[in-house]
Image (cartoon, rainbow, N blue to C red; front, side):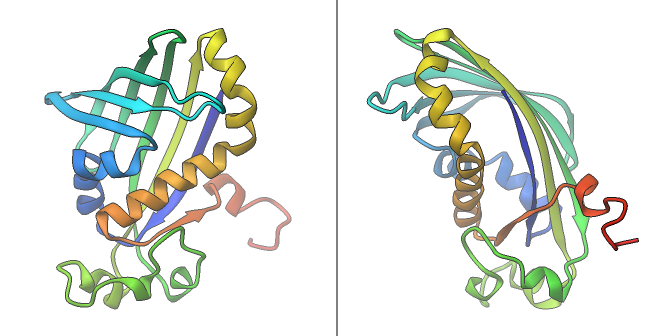
Length: 197
């Protein structure tokens, strides 16, 4: 299964990078997260409880960061095993790009917080008021799992993959305290014949 997305985050690239490496933020954002902890500078232990229709099995596994370019990009490799359901694996390429926030950006539909929800007294309030600093987060991922997992989850995940991803980003938004909006991928933003060129 392959999936991905592009999101605008109204926060500096450095702050987004810190949030992506903060286990408190990640624990709040990952659906069903039971525990997540750094065990080395590039590896995390992870336990999640997954909603597979009638079952809510717990999976234990890990995440490893590869090809890390600080505050710019990394590849995230993950694996998890359910006691009776077998193994699931996933790999995601994540990239952060600086973005100059425009007035139009503030009118986008936000997944959780909106620019007006930001606390004016927060340390990052200047980002929202000056319309200068934002971050584009792009990721592409693919994964596979045992037949048992796929037989239970294929229909649920296949029908709601985008909802699951948007749900993660909405919780990520709330946990780090910065508005997040889904964006069209770059190759869709300038299609030939769409009147944008």
